[in-house]
Length: 280
Image 1 (tube, rainbow, N blue to C red):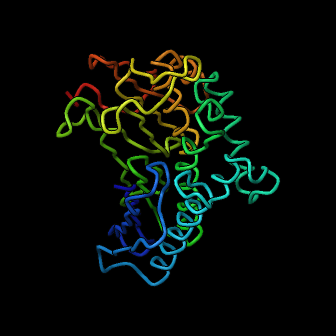
Image 2 (image 1 turned 120 degrees about the horizontal axis):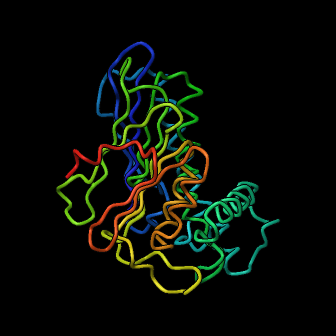
């Protein structure tokens, strides 16, 4: 099943939140945010025409990103680039932008997030889902909505407030129990994004870039910070590192993290905005 994208929007004229969802087609990579032929369903009647139009534009952004970056679609520019049919210069300009962001994320993670170490050529999908979500959220911000949240396959970015004076609260599932929360993250201030990478749903799919083997020391890694693209990449890098990059993330301005070891033990950096003591 493909990624589910959910947009939660609070308009300036009301405290009500409108939720719009789109589900990707089954053949779409889990790192992509949406695919062609998806549909959107408004689940509340309060949305204005302007808000609905902004949501449509946000979803169109996700469709476009999937067409360009999908490694499952053989005719996407990124797939063609990975096969050597085109160069980065020949690809759409947003590919070069994302590749540069991947370089920065690789440096920031101490090399643990490394799209160049994956089989088949450079694969930016560990960052591009968060990047696409931020682009989609920008469409809602430009439309003047009072607050919005985008949930792209479990990775979340927000702005504004869910209600006047309120804060966005995001539950992080327990990797050993699908019906339990490990913790609840509160997003406010500079903490606008939360991304989790884990092996509990898709198996050991993240590689240790040095060893070239699946990383198995952690069940999950969650990163909170101001930008979902980097949070997404850093969470992948943390999982790949088996937790060794935790201090590295702690040293990055504005970012904090939590990791869950193979036996369920939890470690978090100072300032991680969660209620660990209430999540057991």
